[in-house]
Amino acid sequence: MYSDYTAKVPGPVLQKETVIEITDVRKKKVKVEKRKAVVTKIEEISAEQTDAAFITPECIPMDDKEVEEKAKALFSADKLMLGL
Image (cartoon, rainbow, N blue to C red; front, side):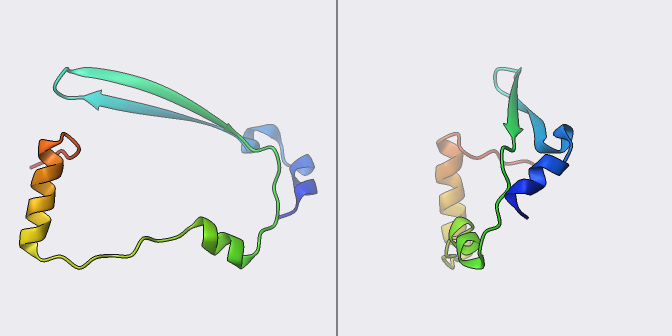
């Protein structure tokens, strides 16, 4: 895509509002957060720039015991919620 392309695209395509509902189960509260994104320009990027922007982290192989230990640590730190 090219930067002069934005002149031909109507406004609603270039504006996006995201509504996020955050639920605190313990306090039984729901917080609504709105985020608005507006595209100001569109530029062509190379494959190298795309690769630099979207880097996938390396995976570390773990056995079941390690996964269970890490899940317990996250759960005790209130960073993980397990659903049944």
